[in-house]
Length: 242
Image (cartoon, rainbow, N blue to C red; front, top):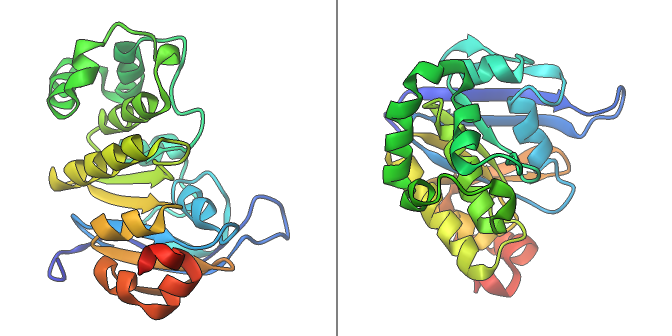
């Protein structure tokens, strides 16, 4: 993976929701094409804010974000979708009154002529969605909604997929399914950047991890190296790291 080209690079990003209040204080990240990147850290470290800043949902005051060598700093979210970046938020990530199929149609809004082709590819990856395509999303469990949200983001055939705490609020079984599904998506060639509270499971599946603390990138290493790092075990994994 080290020989792969850089697909996304964030440099010294300073950002926040309110004027004069910075949540991110110089976050940097380099992502190679095809990697699965995990972002971990304590509550309030700025993990989800960083992901939203990459996707144009939080204003970046200083620093830059590059996509395949092109500056996308503060680019609007709809334009980023058009340019190959998908985003799955943690909450309110489906249209509950719409069916599964209609949710996926919304995901392909910018390329509606390709819906049928992409829908078939999605149901190959998520057969359950094909079987239940006419069921309303509001009647689904949390894990099933997460599946729909991921599938909808994939309808635009993104090169980079941003996942904001995909396992949050799910049962242990559903959490494991979500991590397996994330790895399967990555194996299709999609670069994945995932923020996760379940640090141990995240590091088990990711190629590299970034540890954020107090709004900055503290350090990075492979997932396996971070799993064995005494400081990471003490601060973020606890007894789970043993």
